[in-house]
Image (tube, rainbow, N blue to C red):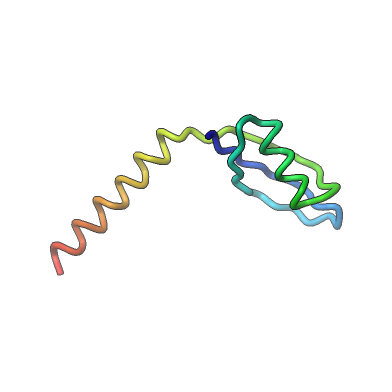
Length: 71
């Protein structure tokens, strides 16, 4: 399931730089966003690349493994 990163302004005028939401598609993710933040205004949206996230987490796991071997 793809993950979407939203930037928004709440109905009270607060700016939120990044909220990541899973959705079947953009419309599904945006629907979930509007359930949590009613009457918000989306200022930016991007689709996150799941391949980059997996490789990044693998790098973190490798780093933790390396640290634990040296202690």
